[in-house]
Length: 251
Image (tube, rainbow, N blue to C red; front, side, top):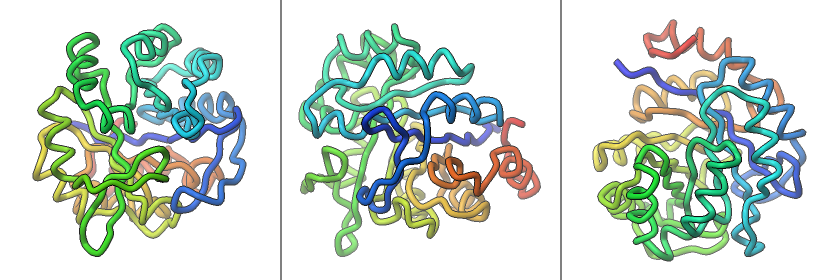
C-alpha cells in the first residue's frame, strides 16, 4: 500500500509566508526558510512553495527564495507561481525544486502541460486547480482565485492527466482557511475520474479532517498551512494518529 503524504504549504508574498481565508485577508505566518527547515525536521513528506502573487503581478517566482528553502530541507520540494515556459521550469529545477506546480498558465495554454511533461517527465509536473463550488458546480478559477472561468473541475482534471500531468493539487476555494474540513465529496469524485495522485488542499482544522480526507475523500496526500504554521497540529502527532486509524504514513 502506498503511504499517504503530509505536505505543509508555504504561500509566499513579499518574501514572507502568509495565510488567509477563502484566498483573502492574508496575515503573516513567518519566515519561509525557518518554517521549511522546521517541517523537514518534524517529518513532513514534502513541501509546497507557492508564490501566490506572481501571476497576478505578472512576474516570475523569486529564485532566491527557492534556493534558500531548497538548501534548508532534505525532502521533495514543489514550487509554483508565475511559471509559464520551459525556461521557467528549468530555472526552478536548477534552484533546487523537485517538482513544479502550474495553474493559470496551463489553463491558458494547455499544450504547455504536454511540452513540460515530455521534457522533464510527468513526475515533475503538478497541476494546481483552484476551484469553487457555485450552486453545485465546481468551476476552475485563475490568478490566485481572482478570475472565474466556466471550466468544469472534473473535465479539466481528466484533460491534464491525458496531457501528461503527474499529480493534481486541488484546492477548494470554499474551504480554504476555514478549518471546517476538506472538500471530501469533490475529492472522492475527482479520484474516480483520474488515475494520478490527488493532493487535497483547503479546510484542514483538526486531525480528524486529515483522517476523513484520506478515508472518505480518497486523497493521496493532504496539504495544509495555518494548522502547521501556528503550531496547532504538530506533524509527528498527526502521523501517529493517522497510523492509529490504519492510515499508512511514513514516520
